[in-house]
Length: 373
Ligand SMILES: Nc1nc2c(c(=O)[nH]1)N[C@H]1C(S)=C(S)[C@@H](COP(=O)(O)O)O[C@H]1N2
Ligand SMILES: [Mo]
Image: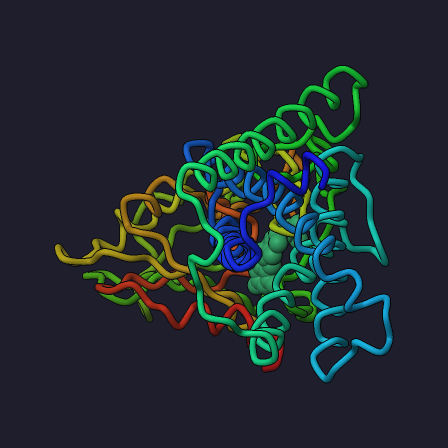
């Protein structure tokens, strides 16, 4: 028996640890899609550490079961599922580690990180299917507390060391994977106007918006609902927003700009100067109710997302990117710029701002079905 085998915890414990870690990886991976602030970076670090720990556990597991795979006579109904699961697990870990070291690799147009996400999400149902065939209750058979503690110490040490080694190798060899944000995203087209990837969460692809007929409404829990024409937007700001059905009276909407990073969950980010209207300026004119708490940004496609009202005040509805008018693909005439939020929350082709009292979980459905309209 080799040193590695002696470090292995009892089989049942290895299996349950794999289940626990896979559960953690799938859920931390999914939750990480909503994290855009650097103070959430620890979640990505834990995800990576747990991934390396899983490599060691799977090493022991595969060593133990390999005869049941290579010897056709030992196959049963559950074996194909086991093979599928093992393959998925390895390709998910492989794509994750490769992404951390490589440049912005794409497969069929999609960043490799996207393949990692899709494969990792598939692990969950296949694992449940595998458990239908192979489920065994946890047991403490063959477990010696002191020894098991040492084994787990070694295991976590291995996870942490591999993670460190990956960082060190990246730095020492100047691997392109070093240049990624804490979210894992890699830079694409920063500061270069509209020349960055056009992305839809599912398949939103509206006809170009006609500025002649387009209007922006600001309504909901407000004292003074507004309606703006395209020429009321900066940099033109020819006319001021008017109350529904009334001539405009106020001063024109003021222009504002901000540098912010659009970080798409599919694995790229792009930093730009965005110019347009400060949402707080619109809200001040519309006068939200005292107990208003959320602001919803709705696209002509039906896609929408909401921000807490304090955060919405400081968000931007952009008409321009790096001194170029926003292109259709990037959301002309108006797109939400929500610094610190992930790309899918930066609603494009906005035509309505709605002030509400409560958080609206329907947005999680809207972003998936908007393109089916
Ligand atoms: N209406 C609408 N807005 C949207 C999307 C969409 O599908 N529909 N995709 C989002 C996603 S996933 C990202 S990453 C950004 C991409 O913006 P870009 O196409 O300007 O790069 O827009 C977001 N805004
Ligand atoms: Mo995205």
